[in-house]
Length: 398
Ligand SMILES: Nc1ncnc2c1ncn2[C@@H]1O[C@H](COP(=O)(O)O)[C@@H](O)[C@H]1OP(=O)(O)O
Ligand SMILES: [Mg+2]
Ligand SMILES: [Mg+2]
Ligand SMILES: [Mg+2]
Image (cartoon, rainbow, N blue to C red; front, top):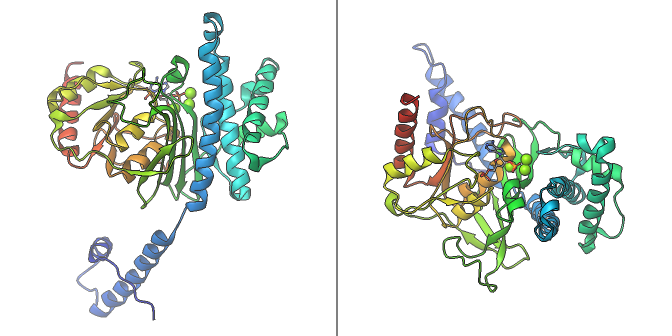
């Protein structure tokens, strides 16, 4: 006979929601409690036996190949003359190319019949007459990248295949079923400057993030705090990955042995380093400076682009990440889902400015209170207090 164990907390919280009256008979409570026990046990069994190993292997392969494509374009971009640097098309080519590569690899490696992808780009502009030349360049790049992996052989994709791969990212996501979530280049501003960017890929199952993969081609393997960009011996290019319930790992993009990473265990905010956007247009630097001051943070902010910030925080390079977009900006799920799981599985906490968890089940957008804050469990209460005070001061000064 199978035995099930369910925590009393689960049953207590379930019975709290029951409509109990003075007339509820003891035996009906007993049968109710048995049926709740079985239901809860079923849920526990399903959650703990669920493995996403196959999807994780596919996601790591997809993000690594997309990173290879992006690195090639960024290298050419940085070597180009000033005039062609102001041309936006290389970024466009890498954005679309990365999305196509991830979409093709996931569909080749997994069951494509039930494939759903929520991704940033769509092929609208590429289908226009003026997009023809760009599409040619994307197709060439995608084929070169895919054939650089020997498992994909030599069956080149047509223009139509590439357009279809990009457009598979039009899914609206939502609370049921499985959905992949992709930002093919997160931090395009950093990509163009030659700085940080990430290929961010997550899997949602029933509205919850269950896999997160971040390829960060320009992030040093050592801490950003101790990194010396002049030293040619220092390796760059990190792949972070997390599966729900299994922790967060990091390896080099060229495939070193993975190491388990953990957020810092710092409990004194004065010693904390904090991350924020490089771009002042993406996050309110004044507000984060006011929060840091209240916490007594001594170090200046570490400003880097993209979800590389989540990766760096997951291995303890810094203790806090603050993100407060300007009024009216709506956050998208592909800008946070992968980073969220990488940090959560490394022991960190990600919430909105009011302390609510992020909800990835509501479609392509995240509905948030004000901003996003990330830190470890010990520092979160003090951080929430400082955020609340700073937001109140900002509101009363308007
Ligand atoms: N006006 C904006 N405010 C906040 N974030 C923005 C804005 N415009 C684009 N972004 C997105 O913010 C993220 C980068 O933030 P960060 O400053 O942390 O690098 C990216 O996802 C970027 O999009 P994209 O993916 O197109 O680069
Ligand atoms: Mg983005
Ligand atoms: Mg993007
Ligand atoms: Mg964009």
